[in-house]
Length: 260
Image (cartoon, rainbow, N blue to C red):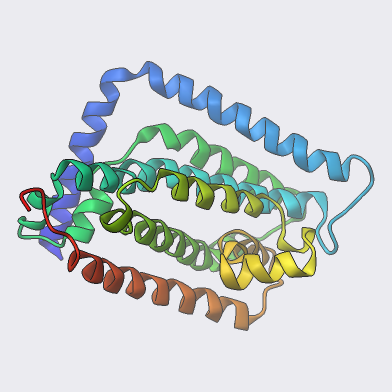
């Protein structure tokens, strides 16, 4: 474990040093995130400004969901996209061979090799939105700690889904459109799952578990989630993480390397 921590520290310190060579990008990323947040707030306001309200979700409660969704976007931009989108290129160029030869877990290497600080604005905006909504709702500080595990398990579930999609590049090579489909489906998480018809709720809960990424953590923060949903969030994250590990080992059986 200590060796992995040392490798991770080296990975991220070099990645940050390289990215900070282009500091103007951070300003551009912050403005882009601000524009995206303004668009999300406007979309939510179109419902609540007209007097409509999602069943059981006040304006402030819906802001909590949107804040968690923004956190999810920041997490994806900072940690997932910079690493997992490169799996396709490494398979195409054959550089995956060098990863597999390293004395370290290839999944760990591919998942943590770099990071992008340009997703940090989304993380900050998401925290600010959650803090503002929480202050309006009178949420106790302890509630944030209780809701944190569900958020972490949601991040793990998203990582596992994204990594498995990246692993399919061993067969299909070009899967950029597939990851964009996943991004599009995750856009549904900006609203509480009750905003959608029953059939869509089922799909967004049990097929593509968007509800476990945003709605369940928001309900945990608001203190109205049942233990069954929390246990489901834990079980889903662990199952998907184990599945991603198995799927990666399975995919490598079909990897023929750059020289064959």
